[in-house]
Each structure stands twice: as C-alpha cells, then as structure tokens.
Image (cartoon, rainbow, N blue to C red; front, side, top):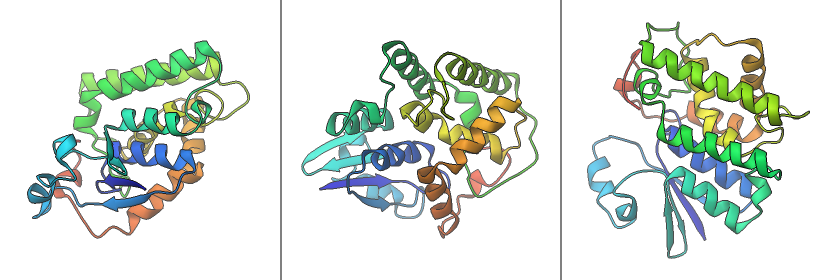
Amino acid sequence: MLKLILGNKAYSSWSMRGWLALKASDLEFEELVVPLYDGGWNERREGDEFAPSSGKVPLLWHDDLVVWDSLAIIEYCADLTEITHYWPEDLAARAMARSMAAEMHSSFASLRRECPMNVRRNVAMPDLSRETIADINRILVLWAQARARHGGSGPFLFGEWSAADMMYAPVVTRFLTYSIPVPPFARQYMSDVLRQPHVAEWIESAQDEPWVIEQYEGDKGTA
C-alpha cells in the first residue's frame, strides 16, 4: 500500500512534485491532503505519521517504509518502476537532468519567497528584487540549455516528460501566476507543461479546495 501525504494543492509546490512522481509510476496510491497551517496543523504534524519528516510534506508511506522529501520520492519511485519513467536514457542527458533537479531542490530561495505558489491566482507582475530576477534568468538559461542539448523532438526539457519537468512544474505555475515575461521558447514549454495530463489534473483539483492561506494570497509571501 502506497500512501502519499500532501499539503494544499493550491500552494504546496513540494507536494506537487511528489505527487507528479507517484503519478508517473502508474502505481496505485492513496493520497491524503492535509491543510497547511490551519488550527490543527501543529497537532497533526506531531503525530506518528509525520514524525519521520519532522512534520513536513510530502511524505510517502509504503507499508511500513517511509520516504520524505520530493526528490527522494522521485528516486524511490524510479527504484520501484523504471528509471526511464523519470530520467533520460542517455548518460549525458541524465546527468544534466539530475543536476537541474538538484539545483531546483537547493536554490532559488528569493523566487520562492517573493512568488509563493498559488495555482488559483493570476496577477500583474509585482516589483521583484534583483535576486529574484536573477533566479528567473538562471531558470530560463537552464531550460534553454536542456532544450538545445537534449530536447530532441519532444516538448519537454529532455524531450520526454521526466523528473526534471516534475521539479520545475511548480515554477511554471509561478511564472503564470505572477505574469513573469519569458521568451517564446519558454512560453511554449510552459504551455506544454500545463497541458501535461498530470499537471492539468493537479491544477484542476486545487480549484475546489476550501482552504485559503491569507499570506499566500498577497503579492508576496513565503513558500
């Protein structure tokens, strides 16, 4: 039995990445969405189910085995199924895809802070700091390099849908939410990501959530 514990689909970028990983596996799994930061949040995150991750989401239980952190969940799903469901077959492409995923995992703090994920909003671009603009430019360079070197005839970063796209899918939603201007190749890539069936399903599900986190409904917040 696979059980994935998630935060709000409207706001939780890391939950989105873990969920996309499970969807790519084609394995059946139960999902439990827990509202972040509501009145019962602190009590829930102190329970046994959350203990291995110190209360963070996403969290994947596989019977008595537990995996936390989105990138670890991606790798665990690759171990359970086929590595080519997640990473390019070509060694050079796979190395670049993993490097990009790791950079997404560890970097871009300013973008996260100033443009928190909210797939239910679309606003005019706010005033952004130089650090956030630098984050955006770095992401666009990475996308361009991946497409130019390894995109081939497919629509995604490495041609076929991969873990790299799963890691950057929440960035695509951020760029859309905050009306970030991007060059034509990036607009096409973003359109293809938003049409990817699993991404579209996630965004559609988020629209019906009853929860609202006010700090993520302003122009700026933390993510």
